[in-house]
Amino acid sequence: MNSLPIKQTAFNNERISALGIEPMRFSDLLPKLEKGTERVEFYILILVTGGEGSHRVDFVDYKVSKGTLLFVRPGQVQEWGDYSRLEGDVVLIDPNSLPHDEMLPSVDQEGLALIRWQNVVTLPDILYQDTSNAVLRLHRDFSDYDGSTLDIALIRHELLSLLLRLARWQSRVSPIASAGGRAQKTYRLFAELLEQEYIQQHSLSFYAQRLGYAQSTLSRACVQFEGVTGKVMIDKRIVLEAQRLLVHSAMSVAEVGYYLGFSEATNFIKFFKRMLGLTPLAFRESRRV
Image (cartoon, one colour):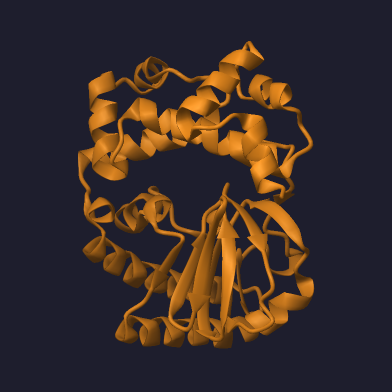
């Protein structure tokens, strides 16, 4: 179920819908930006090449400057700020343009581990230069794009090469991102099902039964990849959505609670306070000051 109270932004460019990839300069993106928050349905990759600024993703303000790589995943809520002093390159990526397990099982979205990429990282000099060169090639070939299958294959493979290079680096600097094997598949299946069902299903037993795993198996995979148990991961997902709705929608506290599957508003308030240490109303007021 989608969280409709928050503005949804889809990948929407009919001219390149078959390609599903749109590289652009930051200067070209700025005139198109609308102020306010949005839940994106595509990946956003931004390489900052000059200047300084900040970008907000799910209530975290990230400082960005030359060498920063900003990565926003589908489903995350972001807010465009003042980027007049920033220079850089942006690549918008429709998830459907990335390989899936029937196409290239070794380099599908599970192998790339995009679900665990940090929103903001500072690239080492060599990787920054490699990334900059790869984005430049994307720009060059995109400018010659004519809709042919060869063009689609070329640009998608260039993007995949870039993502693989970044994923390899992520796996070397992050113990969580480097973990793999059977636990990785277990974690991915749980994370995908959680994203579909968290609004109504708050019990780990539901996910274990649906996926055919023991609850302990799910929790071990979550600890390996997220550092928390399966139940904590469920609760964190629910409270994140509650935060989004409290700040970015006009829903009342009770409406947010009912929307997220709580039969009584008091139960939602207790849950929220247990997770964050303050009531939903206090959280909303603190974020709207």
